[in-house]
Amino acid sequence: MNKDNLLKEAKRVLLDNFQPEGFTIPCKGLYPFQWKWDSGFIAIGLAHFDIEKAKSEIDSLLKSQWGNGFIPHIVFHNDSDTYFPGPDFHHTYLHPEASKKYKSSGITQPPVIGFVLEELYRLAEDKDDILCFIESRIDSVYKNHHYFYSHRDPFDEGLVYIYHNWESGTDNSPMWDHIWETMDPPDYDFQRKDTTHVDASQRPTKREYDHYINIIEIAKSCNYDDRLIAERSPFLVYDPLFNAMLLKSNESLIKLYGIIGDQYEKVEQLEKWQEKSKKSFNDKLFDHNLNAYIHYDIRNSKPIPLISSSSFTPLFAGIPNKEKAVKLIQTLQERFGGENSYLCASFDPTEERFNPKKYWRGPVWINLNWIIYKGLKRYSFDEMAERLKNETVELIDKEGFKEYFDPRKEVYKNQGHGGYGGNDFSWSAALIIDLLNQ
Ligand code: DGY
Image (cartoon, rainbow, N blue to C red):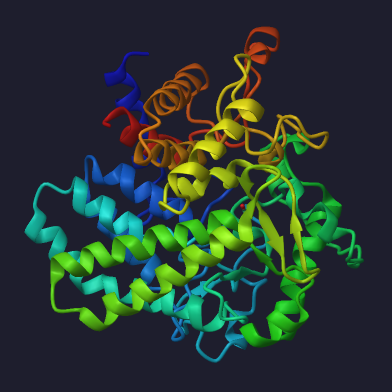
């Protein structure tokens, strides 16, 4: 397909998935509600051709914000019975500050909205109008960051925890396998819906879902109180992707407040968070043997010495110095970048547990590619950035706007296809629009 047709198709996907309530579903059937980080990436795509829809995407998400600043990972604006766990599962009314108006989950997702606002500022033609929009929303995002540093940083080290694998965005990554071994959840009786839309071999197992559900049951038993969750959740992790998104968003808020003017206290606070977080990030999450950023398991007090696409996302937030960045790129090239592979597998292809077809255990994801592309550009690794961009476009061109893609090049010849998961997946469309316009 030529560039114009790809752009036209991508726009069609976004418009098809846009809902009358003013937000975009990630994918028909499979994900029929509003998801937090999906909405951020979708807003970037929408901003290229319909800034009002981009604004509406952000607004529908911010509406669901809790009194304490928390923003949920799913907002149930609409009805649908094609997804589990749906609106009646999470019982967020247990938390005194949860939204009274919107049903939602009680877990969150990577904090992308800060840098998305900066992207909207970059893309909007009418700068006065978008600045006015940002000015009236930016404090909600600041409040969300304040929530993270005041509720999710129990050791006051500038790193915030996630308490559920769904908060990482990389749901069934092999990172969590050893954590599941520390748990023994009941064999819950529930009706999965995802495997009615997508081949079960490309999705997490029933037993994995038992663990996911169990952590939410524990959070409910804590009334979603962060302090109690930090004490009781069997899953408590510093995730490099999650924290890198927070730092990148802090940076964007500093820039945007600078443009708005007269916000010295908030800027000063954001700069303090940045300084402390960057230091802890490099001290605690960089593995000098692997030459990569890794996850840290707080509950079991140990680093998780495994590499995933999340390991490269700190480039986007300017976290490594030049020397570390060079090492990181070597790791990317050596482990993920062989000539027979598309960049960037979601899990280390040299590891035994790498599974190129299964969700976050190996396939390429377009949002991670976009984040890493931006990171490579930031550090002027232009050749690698160009490769990443071209391969991302090639995958979409071959397979359409699939949810995820097999990183092995030969599969496309042997099997005839390599795109998996949902079809017409919104962020695949949104971010291709952005990449094609770089
Ligand atoms: C899912 O259902 O797989 C979602 O990613 C969880 O948020």
